[in-house]
Amino acid sequence: MESILITSHRQYLTLLDVLEKRTRTIEIVQICGEDLDEPLIKAAVPFLIKKEASNKWHGTKQGGRGSPKFTIRADKEVFRHLRKYKCFFFAETDENGFNSVCETDFGLDDIAFLDSGGAALFYTTTHEGYAYIAPELLRELNG
Image 1: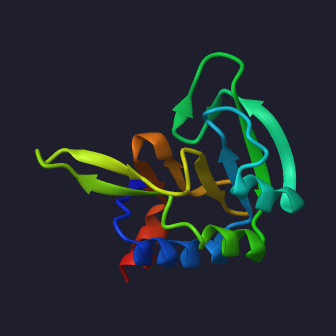
Image 2 (image 1 turned 180 degrees about the vertical axis):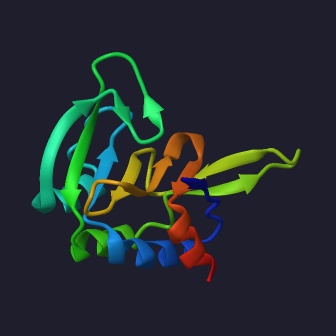
C-alpha cells in the first residue's frame, strides 16, 4: 500500500469512481463507539453483511473490547451516499510546514474498500489523517 494525500473534493470523487469499479465490500469502523444513527451507517444497513467488535483493522490495532466494525456490500447506493461527503478528510500543511488533518462532515470513522479476494484497495486512519491505496489504483488515479 502507498500513502495518498487527498486535498480536494474533485480528487475524492475521482477516487470513489475508481474504487467503485473494483470494490466488493466496505468496512467501516466507528472508533468513537457505536452510533447506529450516524448517516453513513443508516445508509449502509440494507447492505450489511456482518457487524462485530474488532481490535484490529487496516492500519490500526487497539486494546480493550474493540470498536464496532461494519462489513457492507459495495452497492451503488452506498457509493452514492459517500459522494455526498466533502471527503473522508483533507490532508493539509500547517503554517509551520507540518502535515495536518482537516476533518470533514464524514467524521472520524475509519473506512476500507476491499476487492473480491478481501485485499485492501484503499483504507483510512481518519482521525490521524492517513490514507493508503493499492499501487495499481494510484497509477490509475495518476493517469
